[in-house]
Image 1 (tube, each protein chain N blue to C red):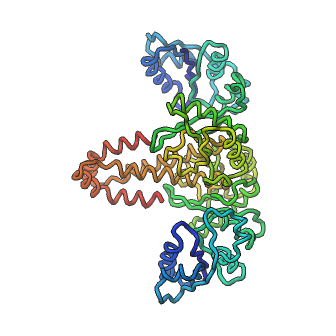
Image 2: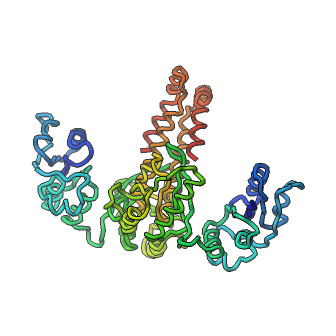
Image 3: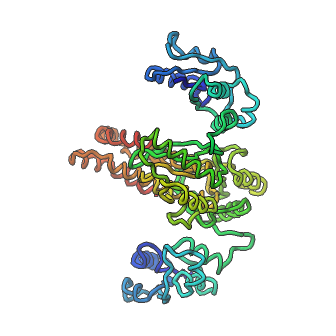
Length: 273
Length: 273
């Protein structure tokens, strides 16, 4: 297995990316192709690494770059080189922490979708009371149509089965009511189509119920999915901050409470991630 | 002030509704008109109440009733009677915990919108690091257009100013990126319109940032707003459950931790509501 890693993408690139590469390199069997500015990369790499190869790329797609424009213009960027390596068979997969829109656009333009799939989706896994589930699309296709939602359901089912290990995964349509009649124009139509065509469709699921874990795949358009992802993050981060502030000011009491609560709260912090 | 209360609407109606009416009656100066099945209501009311009047209504709009159909057919329902009383000037405001769609439809059909407003919005207040803010629409208009979003922004500003006491409230457009170029077709257009026409428009706000409290009004369509509301609820409820489970099993340690943490955690539970 050869994995192409975009070393220049992400808020703390390349330093944090290389840290991840080194951690992965010691535990996987394949080869890691680290793509980006050679000097920037090599100063973070130890001199001997048996399964890491640096592939030079002069340009960088920045977080604020317009996706499609960046893909068309920055041909010598680390992201594009990584995608071309997959197209040419030099690499089997891409990892990037960079500009999401550009990554989705590059893959879509250069690699195309699988037969039968018209638009890409970003799959994000969420924690729940009963293990992880996957939400898609969480940002690649903000204006999805009914057919796209069906494709997301099919792709999400494959992901839940192979990556999350769920046998016969249950698909839910994210909606604003459980009844088939509820929703906006898109979800009302999607409910009909999914009911008719998807054997593992379990009906509508509301935002308050996704964390129950009764659905393995939650399907929505990329705008809604992104809002769900970021709202959950914001809500969880804020509550974690409140938990830290819930400890008493008195240092002795604080220490006692901290000692007693530590295992439980570490578990919580880990679970809500 | 005369407030018409739909005694039959809501999961625990009329018992819980009457409890609320009694609590309110002792602290407000106006009169409360309690509307619904007289027998069901009176068995929960004490014999003497100086500012509560029971208005009989034979029918009940149930939670599963289709909104518009219910409004057109159940003319003698507690909800419709309440709305008609406002139209006729017999009451000044309505309170209902019943079928949201029916309530929105009834008000829209019977009372109409204010001049210049085309669609109703449900305003929901959320907690944040810096006090409460209002999200609208959170469910009345799932397929809102650009103009509706502008109207929601204007109504939300009025709400934030008068109800939340925010001077010159800051309006944010809920979106999937901070830049003006981000979003779906609706929010891209809405960003242009709001920038041009709304003096107190503060730009896009992402789901993860709404709990920072930098925006007093968060505008979105009714589908997205409802998803935000319910996802936050689900996320917060789950984390609260995890906090309860974070206490150690050992009963002595549990008691000590509970005693020490109680003030802080009660504050947390209250704040995240």
